[in-house]
Length: 134
Ligand code: ZN
Image (tube, rainbow, N blue to C red; front, side):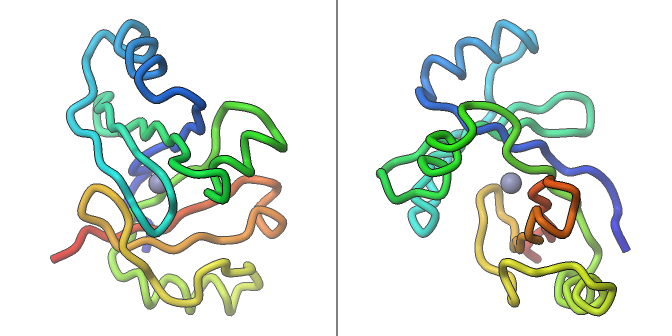
């Protein structure tokens, strides 16, 4: 069961510059900055109503975000949907024919367990399933 759109991930080159830009755009400052070592990214979160905006900047050249920006430039990177039970959701999506990037959930930013579906099975939209850690 998908509960809601949890956040929109945006790939940026310069986190500090983009934090300033989005602070101006949204009229509020980020509420947290958090590094995810395993992904080679630093994230910064804004809250807009019930949806978060997650800025993602690479911390090294091998980071998936560095590769994304190299190929496509800065911009929307993924949509993240909050789910009730991420293991069950991954089985369900896989059985429905979606290609999983992560067969099992991993730790993400903002106290979440996350897994991605491959964009080639979702009309080019990288899709994250996330579940709040209990
Ligand atoms: Zn995300």
